[in-house]
Image (cartoon, rainbow, N blue to C red):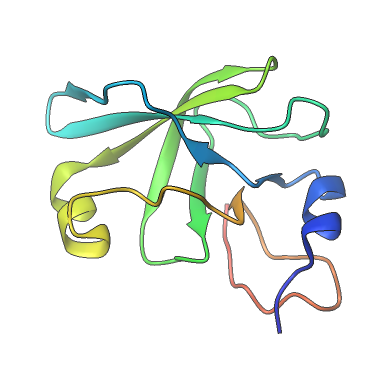
Length: 113
């Protein structure tokens, strides 16, 4: 079972449908920072310093290092984890960036805060 896109748009614990930006990623020590865009009309409780999953993967977390309510966020992940989980390239599109257990009945994605 999966969460429907409409349910994700109203779930305050996630940012639905984030897309990897064409902006060049930057390195910070042993981590990489990537920029994603999202629909700024969705409400969310996510903020800078939150640790999130790039769902559908729950094998690694990203840290939100910049959150722009205009529809952009920067997320950071360690290079070793990026290589091990994503083969060195972050997901181009996520169904959501999410922090905690799904609350919608049709959701079977495990998450944590």
